[in-house]
Amino acid sequence: MTHKSETKEAFVKEAVFPAVCVDGEGRVVGAVLQNEKARDKSLEQKEVWMVHPATGRVVPAGMGPVVRVVQEDGWVRVVVRGKGSGEVQGEEGVVRADEGGVLERLEGVVRARRSAMPEGSYTTHLFSSGGEKIRKKTGEEAIELLLAPSRDRIVYEAADFLYHLMVLLVWEGIPFRDVLEELSRRFDQ
Image (cartoon, rainbow, N blue to C red; front, side):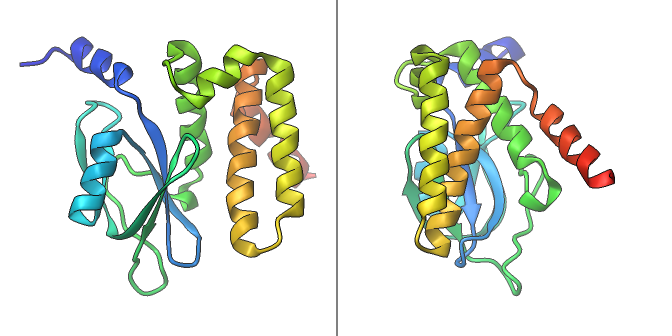
């Protein structure tokens, strides 16, 4: 039997990365944390598997059938086949975009990477390079987003920009909720 602290330790030691689940049209339908085992199992069994955030175990995410898995720089894009409107029903532990939790979850992953600084992680590389490098990369991603020639590329570059923006916010010690509160304040005016 594994103690909770050992499970958490194993969870931190094994590299986890965000897996963004999209439908055939590129709409984000959810996000989970994966490791190599979860990614490989998703490919083999044609269903999304995830690392359960509380236990660190690899479990089914309860999403639609996997069409393909694309390894990106520091994250994975999982294309799933949804039912009807393209919405995918998930189980506990899966954060769907319409719940507004994807960015908060990303913030948690980025904060964990800054704390653990796992070797070989792109996020670790950014934090090790310092604030100037993080700002430069965030700016580069903003430019790539502005110059993106197609809808698919805009979606792809927007995800890159949001990731780098989150790294910048964590570097500066600014909780993402502060940004949400500012947006809410503007909306209420």
